[in-house]
Length: 340
Image (cartoon, rainbow, N blue to C red):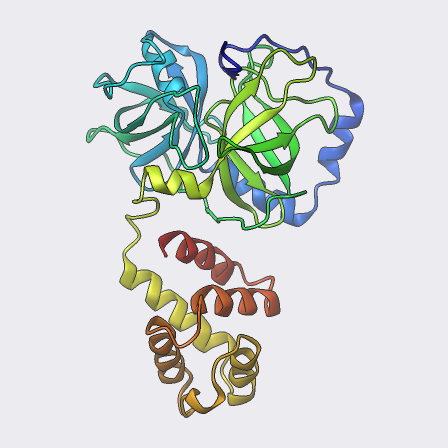
């Protein structure tokens, strides 16, 4: 007996749009607006290939030419069986619904893990990656979503955007992560108000509201329950399926950006030694501080060589904690973690 139904086929749940929901928008803080900006530039709407006005599901931009989504969304868009084992070769159509330019873009699957209704922890299923056709370019404002792996999911507040059938202009649903289940998916409690995840959310990014970054992808709803739980595939599983996430970012560009920003932010011996002591960098191995750029170049080289365990993550986390409003460093930290 099938225990799960994908969000594309689950029966619609009517949602009430209350005045209180409108009032909440007016009270978004600056961080929430920044998250909306990142979300708007990366979320995509996938159409039926037979009708570019009928939304089938969602996806999100993970590089300048690649979209992450669910395999069952692609199958539904192409009107083929969800159990199709061979990667389809037909074009998949999508747009960026939250940007001004709604040009429909064509793409083809380049990664394919079809549905498996009997998954166990560690299995990869229902994941697809689409690559833009060569004749198409991204619209102005489109950019890859910031991604970050969570180590502790419990209680994390998240935001999801999709196109349920009853909301033709899209809808936002807030949720709270609960934890990993035996199939390797993360349970999301999405009954936090009037909104619930419905058909049309499959493949959408799950945005961590604290980190302002994607931590997973909506994949399924469990049927046979009055208030159906929602599930996401965590980022570490998505990376196993497609190891090139953010792979089009030149490593030298990433390294140079980090080096320059460290040199600008932490430009005295006192600041530098304080940060390094906090992350457990051996006191006797701290380089001589002459020029900030040269100093941090030596430090990064030592960390690259393994002088402390998980050194880059510790360093970047410490810097972001000390300088929480530094947008540049916070952004590149997330991309570095994904690349590593």
